[in-house]
Length: 114
Length: 112
Image (cartoon, rainbow over the protein chains, first blue to last red):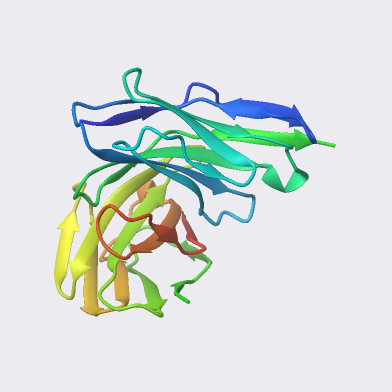
């Protein structure tokens, strides 16, 4: 079974600084997808970024980028120039290819301080 | 553009009462549909998913059930709620497998 581990229950960062959220996963699959979702206090789940395992290039989306290390089964999220609106729970998620079962980590609560 | 609607936003129900949560998607056809539960301070757990009308797959055994009576409608039900059913329920859709899932605003269910 696939498991997703987020080892940082809570993190904080000063506004405009950079923060990295960790995620590791366990799988025997070779083809899969990884996601980071953001859940602000409004509780809506918002897709932040997506990475296909067959792509070596790290995905980027504006201020958000990932460091995907397939051999190490690591998928960290870097948030640059942190903004107050980035305050939220961040969930790492894994999904096997041709599958509908998305497995989520327990989440990291990020607080951006002014 | 596609939108997903989920209601009600909050619900308080007594133990043993029935449940019906509804989710609809607009702006797309034959989406994959999902029901998740999020316990307090924890990640999401997939409960059910559906790849078409009348097709329901269950990921965990429980006293909940799901139905898809129409292409873009997904309903989560229970005949008799338990205290352990309390939580935050999220509906999601995707174009197909392997595609990102897009979530509704969620329903906070409290069982008394």
